[in-house]
Image (cartoon, rainbow, N blue to C red; front, side):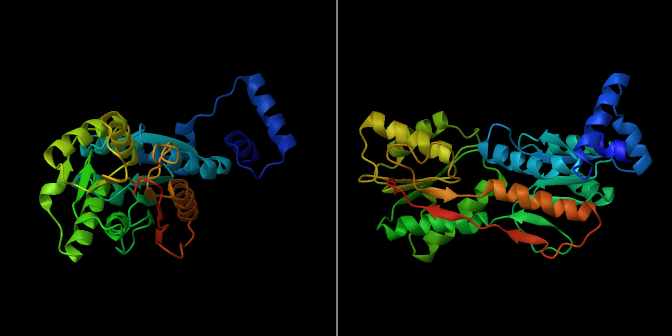
Length: 314
């Protein structure tokens, strides 16, 4: 057991002894067999983490935090990229569950019925990321995407703007929850216009943001504020505004979401919603550790909140 802990990197073994075990393993050219370990314990030392994208900084920050919590406890983090596809997620679950993971972290609640059944039937402890629910027996760590969307839109309203647009890409469930928050905030004051929404299924990027901003202004030259569903789109819009000589925020207010790298040094600096991705990763991994050890979790739904960061663009 001590040798196993030493080789897995679990921190409860004396460092000098860990070094002796590793030297012996190297001399013997010994490589641990995870399949044999899984058979012996009915569980492997792996934790599956399913995210929809590895190109999005939001999920990179989350994954780093998950690894920081789980690796010192001897768990291997197996990352699955679903590419926002229910079919890909379903296949990843089939493959990973065959290896008897000790736990799972999965993004959001929208998935195929087959995936839901696999998670429930597996008996593997699972924590859901990025979104919240009060459903009994479900463990999750996230924030209200809808409330955050409302907060951005209400801020634009307080700046005296009424022709407020919404521009989105990717159109994943969290983006659409932000869209609903935008709609509700405008409906509250009686100035919601569905024609001011521009929804693109394309992958979110700075380049796409520039193209969508150009297209949007051609369609709606009288718009006085735009809420972009993600910062990369908003950053692209700011660059396009510079190219076209459009004064931000005097002519159009621009706001983003997620407070990605670069948003605090764009020109002008971008007003956005700061989402605590690393905190979500840490708290979800800590909750999962408790579940994997058979412990009870005091709070099954943890709301980490969000912060409206007001800068010069809006």
